Image (cartoon, rainbow over all chains, first blue to last red; front, side):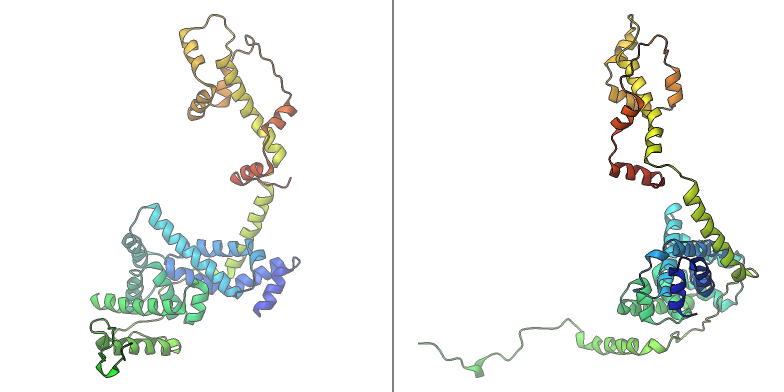
Length: 179
Length: 192
């Protein structure tokens, strides 16, 4: 379904629920994987994805259509991930390395994890990056988004994103060579 | 008479310079910028190591089939809880504040105007404490409003309520803005 048709259904009070249901079905997988890549654990991702769509529901009337619907939802999901990870650090007064270690241990022993050695090494190397840099890397490398799209979602300049991404690649290469 | 400027005698050296080793590093900087400009369509950038785009994550069976219903239920629940759970409006909030106002009044009455003619030293000492300090102390203490009221012997007291309840409500005198702030703080509905 075209985004404008979806928006039309959501704007109409008679079809708002139906439109929202279609919206969830349309975007749930992309949003889920975006979140899952950041928080690693399925249960955490599940909670966050539900929170994202509940926020979308509550703020549908505030969606201004100056950005694409998908960009707007993606932005909400991105902020939820970053807030979740920040809360983890603040709640337990953990420095970034301990949160990374916690997420890394979920890769080793968490449920719904299944990958080969190369995939696991890459994921663990990614966990050593700062959250925002990891986010940009995920969107570029795994989701193959254009820098212009990522710039809209993160409200960062394309130049800054390119620099961040290339630095991330260099760091990952170094981390993987060490390991 | 002005002197003529002889440009042949002027120093040809430019009055500005460049950072050390600038021209040695410039080609590399330009090259990396060119590759950044070109790479939009080329995503794979790991030159020297083997990587995989496949994610090592799985989901429970039928997860995406069931997720929309789960979310739909939660949106309906949040809609209902917003409508039902907190039904207080401005008037109800004013009524809810009456017991607190009465408790403060009684405490002030007890300590400022004791009924007994024979006061103990303790009572005299307490009477010297300002009512504001007493209220602040009671707020910090574990005493509930009920406990405070139970301490009072109403039969011995000569209480006169000058104000009716409706007057007391008016005297609470919250502005609309203050009332909105209170309602927002306690997540109370403003529409009754």
